[in-house]
Length: 248
Image 1 (cartoon, helix red, strand yellow):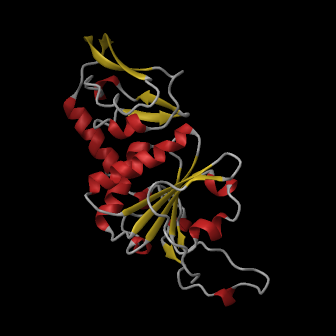
Image 2 (spheres, rainbow, N blue to C red):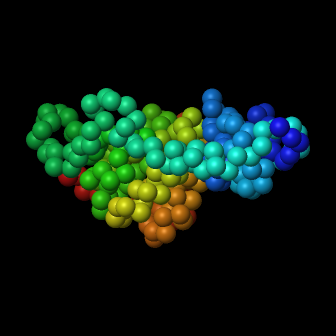
Image 3 (cartoon, rainbow, N blue to C red):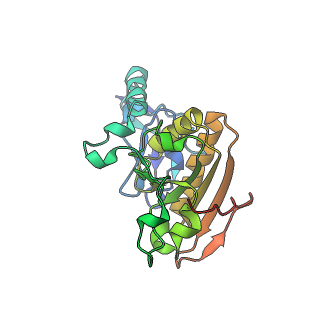
């Protein structure tokens, strides 16, 4: 152990947005209980690449006694992180891929308009990168809270789209960045709409998606919808809103 440069995280300033997780090529930072945490000192090279995107200035470089940076161990750690397969997250049988696109209105009662959900699973962590429902899909990536905050969320946003949900504050942002990059690369995604809450930490969802799009090299139409904490739509972004699709 020697005195060297290493990242310092001010938890009082950290809003848990996860941008530093995306920016850290060594996967040395994770969001734990809503705050950025350094996993192990030996994974941090002390170069500070994670600092530039932090919206609150919570990250800085300090000199102190720390474990030496271990490039070999770090490479193994990064490889293990990238090898996580969504289908192996748990043994639950309901994680199998299902496409409900062919469901018919007659499947529901006359007084029931029927759900708009067209695929399963919906958790980004559980969805397989090569799930058939992703090919040629108009993809909706929604923050976990959005559906509970917005009136008529299904008919407003899910109709005609394939849904995945995630939380940039409580989940592993680097894992989601890598997974979305693979999803964009390996499928013919026609468009992606991000629906997220107005709170700062939820802005991490946009960062994850835009950086994954850049990393994938794909030109995919992107739209962002911001929901207020009272459930009202505050912004539909700068790109055109994807047209409402006919119910299948």
